[in-house]
Image (cartoon, each protein chain N blue to C red):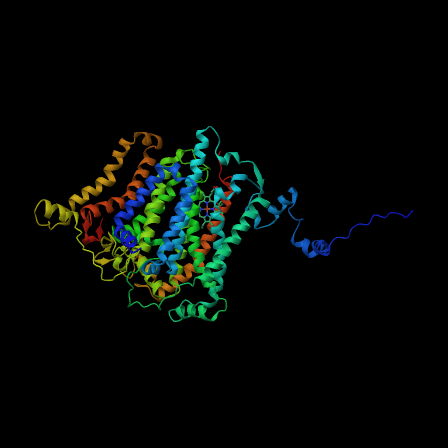
Amino acid sequence: MAQTETVQPKEALPVRAWNWLTETQIWTSIFRHAAPINDRNRVLVMLSNVFLHLHPVRLKKHGVRLRYTWCMGGLSFFLFLVLTFTGLLLMFYYRPTLEYAYSDIVGLREHVPLGIMREMHRWGAHAMVITVWLHMFRVFMTGSYKPPREFNWNVGVIMLVLTLLLSFTGYLLPWDQLAIWAITVGANMARATPFLGHEGPGAALLTLGDVQLIHAADDARFALLGGTFVGEGALLRFYVLHCVALPLVIGFLMAVHFWRVRKDGGISGPL
Amino acid sequence: MELIKTFINLFADPRLFFIMSVLALVAIVWKREAFSRNSVGYGLLAFLGVFFAFGLFDENFRLIIVKPDNVPIVALIFLVVFFTWYAVREGVRNDQRIAAGDDPIEKEESDRVWVWPDLVYTELISLILCTAVLIVWSVGLEAPLEQPANPANTPNPSKAPWYFLGLQEMLVYFDPWLAGVVLPSLIIVGLMAIPYIDTNPKGNGYYTFRERRVEITIFLFGFLVLWSSLIVLGTFLRGPNWNFFGPFEYWDIHKLEPLTNVQLSDFIWVRMLGQPLPENWFVREVFGIVLTLGYVAVLPPLMARMFRRYYEKLGATRFYVTAMLLLMMLSLPVKMLTRWIFNLKYVVSIPEYFFNI
Ligand code: HEM
């Protein structure tokens, strides 16, 4: 009688390769725990990954569903990241001066292979305006601004304004007819700011002796444009606001916003 | 075909457009149970789809909607319609559950699930879909680039970026200091004030309509009628010289609209009292000033009297802030109506101080 021997079936090559890979020192130095296929590792993955730790470990079921959040806040954030990335690429090509601005955009269109960076940036910006509106609409319709989330709603409103301002400042940069006239129409409003615009009500009252304090060359529009019309000064100002100042501020506020979503008890739900 | 177009053009008019959007809102709020049926929601989307598809065959209409920067607004129309319908439907569903003695759906679903995989995967899929849409859109539609900037050559019409067209539309009715500075600031202030003036503890964290009827109606009025629909109007229906054009109408630069607007001071001194306009601006404008003061200073206490219940519930400060914000919000439709009915240009007009209301 022959001895029966139990033969372990050999694992398939990809499985063995995977097992080997996940045991190397390099892999284990990056991923501190095995794949999140059991509860312990599902906790660990949320706690040890810097990106995922924006989330809690567990969440009420309704808050996970698209039905409730429409994922609009998440998409706004994602679009912001896309815009940051594509914007960075655009900055390699674009110079904010009267001499180069327009021709750099033409160059982007004609010489950069597969150049859809400008399209991604522009359409992404339009899309972000829309997602932020819809996000606000969702937050209103679920009553999520009610206590304890009043403050976070306010952070949101400021980010909504900043989103529009980012879009507005970016609109000027291609320096074509569309750009300067849209900005001219917008900026002309500032001329009529009460007290601070030279055609605004009350500005005429601000005098020192018989010197007018507010005139075309120092009013609110001048501060916005760095000049009395949309020219070199405006281009530089809008460029700096668009590429540096506003993204920094809105990024900072997003950190506050997400932190507060967590601290206010996670996604809202019935009490 | 041509007949339908002529018919639609005939009815396209800023007055009708605005009144129809108000009526649509009234219908949504009033008949919300019917509105929230699936057939209505998908029917509306299908109707819009057919309308735009039909419009594409018209050269004038096509010129406007395929203008690259207008494409997002076409998308916006679909999205706003869809999500309004969706939010109202979820609200109505919960209302029905509550009326039947059940909890809202959100309460039923308050057991906890793992963020990995339940949420992380949803996010990943949304993110991939969003990227895919963005890439297809970017490959398919080139970003616009017109002639180089030329300060000497003003395009007609010159339009602000699309998300500000609601504000630009207000310029028809108000001077820039109101339409471009004061009212936008008040929109921001008003939005920020919402959590502090709405003391209704109900409807926190779930969709509902009945428990927050008033708040939701006011918000929808602002969001749908005053903001979204004016953007649509400004984008698609305003042409050269900011004249109004039907969707299938050729944008004729020479279209003339009679300018017959009069000032309130003219109206009262010259037409009613048969006298020349007084020299002194204060005497000249005294009626308008009284009216304006009445609007902002006398109406709120009257409202407090009329809406005693709300006054007591909210307390004096909250009530007056709310009343002021509401009056400011309503100032636009009020001004529209007086313009349409009496051709009124300014209630108070003191060009000496750039002060026109
Ligand atoms: C720059 C744009 C914004 C980004 C990236 C953003 C992002 C987010 C995200 C990711 C969430 C988690 C839940 C969700 O996805 O719905 C959230 C929640 C929230 N957002 Fe925003 N948001 C933005 C603008 C706004 C605006 C404009 C408002 C209101 C005016 C707002 C008010 C809130 C509130 C109150 C919550 C808590 C909602 C809840 O707990 O149900 N946010 N936001």
